[in-house]
Length: 522
Image (cartoon, rainbow, N blue to C red; front, side, top):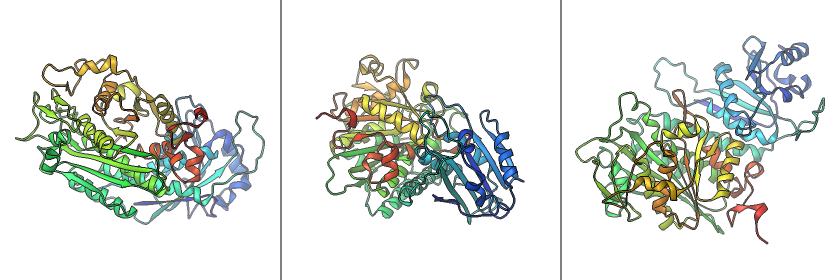
């Protein structure tokens, strides 16, 4: 395990004893002087070497230059940044840290504007996954990586001064990064862990452990009780597994709260596809199908530790989509918690079934007026929005914009997909039930349709805010989980926290009304 620490000042260190990686956009690296950074480089790197290295950088898209062996390195982030990317260039930060880390106690120095501090710190956290079962791996239990910031003022399009007075991040602001890094590491570890170690029982233990840290007792509904109480979606999906399915809820209810928010996570701990079984090349990696629930657990911890001011519920819809005598069959009809009936025409379209139960529980039982569900829902998400941008579907245009803003600020990118029930929901038409669970035409906005299935059980006339996030591809990179979702949710709801850094970067939401502050009616 690598321990991350965050500092708002540069600690003194000899690169031979504490290697250092300095990262920033070239324009920002050029704004700092040797005197600003020499405490990390002396006595191994002279001012002339430092200057020569900076001027030799030609990022395309990134570039690095060794200052002293492989123990002191300066790295330039991509120069270009489109309007749909994150200004922090967080994905490049993660890759640079992964490539340049030397595996001992070391420092990562981020040279950035204050608005990029949170995303940059979270990007470093993503570079150090926790889960490993390698028997010959060198133990790194005592390794500490110190993340330190040099804050340069925002230019806001103005001409860059030759030298500027550096800013700072307060200790209180850094706490948001500490909590988020913990949440990201927790999320990635859960997603990386195989089902024989992360089945429904073990996932509940993870929820219970976070509940203990926050002094919250989870509510657990599982097994036959799910069927008795009408949770036909969760029960039907998980009934064939040896470990029974569950609906688990963590609730944080501070005094004087006026708004109730629910985060609902898809927690399919393994997805074989059920009787509509996946092929041999499609099934490996399906341990990641709990990525939505894992992200919500990490984000819930981060939000509560950041002094969340409103009622916040985290709902985990947990099941293993397995094959067995009691498995759901195509043609079966299930009654979900909404009371609506669903004809199953694809047992591999199971995530929407468990989430439909979860969002209705959030509305009916918890009285939530802002409901967000997060899921590795469709492979079509990757076709629609790619590997880096999750897909956002919402009944509320303001919140669609909030989500895009939060994605750019946090580094967990999002892009909207069409919300048009009157054109797309007919894909689920059934002759014998209220709806089918999979579309008739897979080429007709499949990711939107999958989300609309969930929204249909909440009701398209639901008066509150409903947000659906499909993050099937951003949940992992290569063979590793990314911890996607923690930074996004923490930033999206940053206005609901008493945390100065989150307040600084979050979309400006009127907490009581859930609308942009600038459009608030007098």
